[in-house]
Length: 266
Ligand SMILES: C[S@@+](CC[C@H](N)C(=O)[O-])C[C@H]1O[C@@H](n2cnc3c(N)ncnc32)[C@H](O)[C@@H]1O
Image (cartoon, rainbow, N blue to C red; front, side):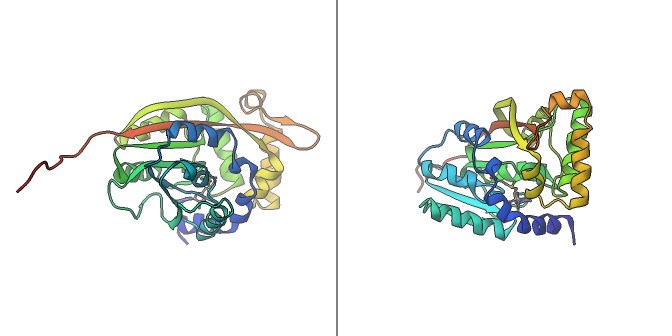
């Protein structure tokens, strides 16, 4: 089984857990993304790696159409169910790999992607594909976890996430996000750092289906974290659970440039 098939198979199993995940259902990371997207009624939107459709369904009431795309068919079924429950008729769930989008060039006004690029095997391919499918002037808005700038914090967070959930590839630093957008030819417009997503250990490992023997290693990494890591990630052992907070970024980048228009004619 290749890496992509493995990621897909694991997300097929996780779809039901994501549907009931409070972290994904809403909160500041979704509100900030919607704000930065500057939604317009005429927008034709693509939500990449839609999961169970929370972002697609948050955007849908304010735009013309949302194509909610994902690698895992079980996620797309959950998206269809969520759209139906909310009475949204402009959400179209479609299978798509973020790294090889099955769409023509220059067809979307807006591409959104939330809490997902850290799962992509080749995030640059996602950025390049986004640039290709956006219309000139179109925008990309991403909200995703990020690692801190210091090397120790970056290495620890990424080691912990890969241990808990093998579908994690990397949480990128804010500067890495910006570089990837630049390299794909997207113009960075605005980015927000310093945001924190509150997490609870029990729900976090249940959602990813972490095996019991690994859960103990993950727990140990949190409880034995150095004072510096505890401060960076706000790790607290409380009576009910271990609480901590992941940093995340939200940013908007735009495809600039136009095309020649043929005026007049024979
Ligand atoms: C955490 S969920 C996404 C959450 C969702 N965007 C939201 O706002 O609630 C991550 C999703 O990424 C999808 N995914 C991972 N790699 C992918 C790829 N290469 N192409 C498309 N989807 C992918 C998984 O199937 C999964 O549904």
